[in-house]
Image 1 (tube, rainbow, N blue to C red):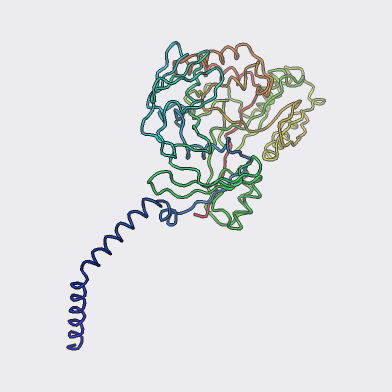
Image 2 (image 1 turned 180 degrees about the vertical axis):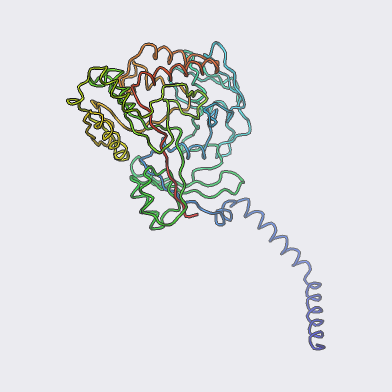
Length: 447
């Protein structure tokens, strides 16, 4: 014990003498180390942080270009003038506020001066580079932007929710593009890192042509998660991982009748077929407008399965069911649904053949597929008779046309609600389409 105490005293005296003799050098060394640490952090702020931050490796299925990335990625990298809430209503984003004048022909936006591009330059009104038909943007000052519309267009604020970018996918969101790899025009790999001081996880995206390829990559450990799988059966091939399903209220699975086809051109026949559609387990859709939209109404005709009513309508229409035939065109993801519908229609007396395609073709009788629902209840492109390229059914109804025209001119939201309630009621009654359900997508992850 005494020996240990004597050794301790010896080392203490030695350290004290060395410190006394070399005080100046110790102080200089401390200061140099402190300054060096400060400089390294200032010059290379991302090096230590990127080494310690977690990386999320995600697979997405589809063919995307650098100018048309998935919205979920765009919104991480930048912002629009506005952003839309869950009901589709516009909220401030780059713009703090806006005012519509001249009966909706002029919008003036006041921009948030705190936003900066990922190169450190402030975002100002001159940077807004939307290319919208019949809309002219002019700069009043750095934080005031004016949009002049040729005609009033009430969905305009939903259009300017699209995130803004400069060349090189430079934005002003919480993430910035670190690396992008292309094959031709198609994005193969994308890496996002934190654009600010926040310690956000690194995000890596790999893009695959098919869900099968993405699942193989997951099994091999190339990725940590797959987003937006559409086929629940694909999940059966993966025994491990956390699985989550999401109801997509921005899409609807529906039957679209070719109203120019002689057999389904009559409303009563379309209604009869609607009553003969079996019930599916997914959440039911009642109209073309999403149940989450501010413009939604459930005061529409319900086509609950009713074989007796279906037969009654067919008889009233003078259809000889023994000779009636129908072709139901669909896509690989909906074959099971199509076969269930075809079986029900055949039982009704309308022999139905299922035809599988990989893309929308002209000349179909009935088409089963999913369609995106626009965030604003304006559905002019989908149902107005002048929209030959996007009105799949060829539907023509002057009352519907008038409602769609009025709906996109009216600025008062309560009046718009009434317009779109009338639109939905009339469209569902006329049945150019039968809205079945909101589809699900699936995510699988390791953690």
